[in-house]
Amino acid sequence: MTGTSRTERAQYTEAVDSIRQRTTYRPTLGIILGSGLSPLADSIAQPDILPYESIPHFVSSTVQGHSGQLVIGRLEGHQVVAMQGRVHYYEGYTPQQVTFPVRVMGLLGIKTLIVTNAAGGLAPHWTPGDLMLITDHLNLVGMTGQNPLIGPNDPAFGPRFPDMSQAYDRELGGKVQRIAKNQKIPLRTGVYACLSGPSFETPAEIRFLRAIGADAVGMSTAHEVTVARHMGIRVLGISGITNVHDADPLHPTETSHQEVLEISKIIAPHMTALVRDILKQL
Image (cartoon, rainbow, N blue to C red):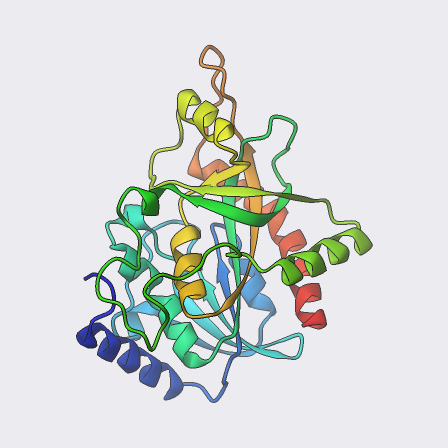
């Protein structure tokens, strides 16, 4: 499956119709929750919960920490749709399958997308538990031939060659920085690098990522943001720094997914408070 063919457009429509038949909400804001950050969805009032496997053409998450369901309801005065867990390229899915829910959310009517993830920090002075406002990204997977927009382009979705100079909305980013300062929530800013995974990075890869300007690294987000921007959706991205990489080949620091999930438990309350305050100002 590549690009957007007529058959694929019919699949998006079928998924949207299925969702609309099971909820009366008409969300205008979408949220994608990364590893261990699912608790934010628990704040959504009077939710309609739709497991991914119950939605036509959605694929299921196979990773611990990703519940795999849409949660649709009200949060801070907004009608929202939250992805409680995402799917990843490394699970064996195509970039188009990974971003299928973003297309569906766009067709449901969302105008703003908040993307969260768990990421490894590349700055030596950062600490696990930090939050990072994503100001830009390096889609290394997309740059090596796995861009979700490869294939036929549907002009109803967006242009053949979408501009990515402002992938992350500066106005929304400015609001987040002011909120974090007022609420005394430490907030880093930086560039997120997207790799395919599922293996964590070697010390040499960490040195390379630092050299090309990355501040955090993960295995998601960039594809979703690319498709959202293709559809004209504003994007706000926040990373939860779950571990800090050591580039010293003689004294490497081991990383595990369990460690990511444990630190995410610490991050989740801060992420939840920040996102809720953002919604109050939108």
